[in-house]
Length: 95
Image 1 (cartoon, rainbow, N blue to C red):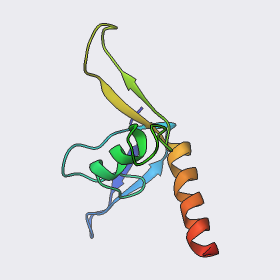
Image 2 (cartoon, rainbow, N blue to C red):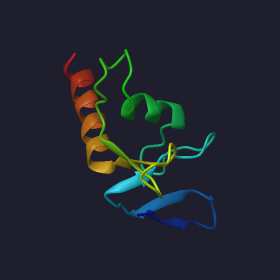
Image 3 (cartoon, rainbow, N blue to C red):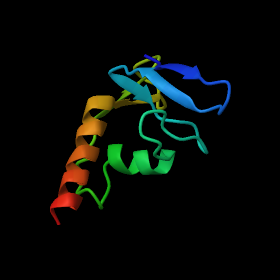
Image 4 (tube, rainbow, N blue to C red):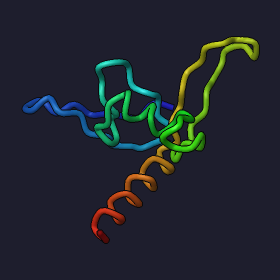
């Protein structure tokens, strides 16, 4: 479920060489390997809130090791995230 990354020797920049269906929500202080968005920006897109009317625009899932657990790993659907960003870009260009 992780993306394959390749680190270039000269610049130290990571590039995504293979995109999977889901990516993990990045750790605090890190950025998304696909979009470069911060953890808090991604949380705003995948969690229900007043800003999005309780309906997050980007699909995500929570993996729990046991069904009764309160915590889990948040996985973001890459296709949904990229579609949302493309729609936003199209709206910005149309305005």
